[in-house]
Length: 151
Image (cartoon, rainbow, N blue to C red):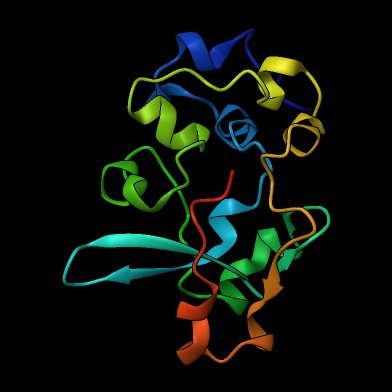
């Protein structure tokens, strides 16, 4: 039996009280969190690159092996309400998990707001069509692919 989502739960339910399906539904499917990032130790700045995790499908912006991704990418972070304080800084600025953790609303284009799972792509807020798979670029060259944070 599929668990139903409470109406507008993201506006009324604290992150740590969401059900697993509600928590998962917060993801807008943009794929930005799957971009490889560089963190500079001297400044603690996080810079996004166009280089995507080897498991990201660049067209659907979904993980090709989501349920078993840790078998292929052990360092992939599993988000949880308790982990957000330590990892929110490297999530994209438009990420629902980061926004709600900060007490901010979801953007108008978010699929939970629009009711359309394609709204993230139609609004231009996903990485669809412009990522480079990580196996195509040596890690020592990743700095050449730093971008302003994805839209």
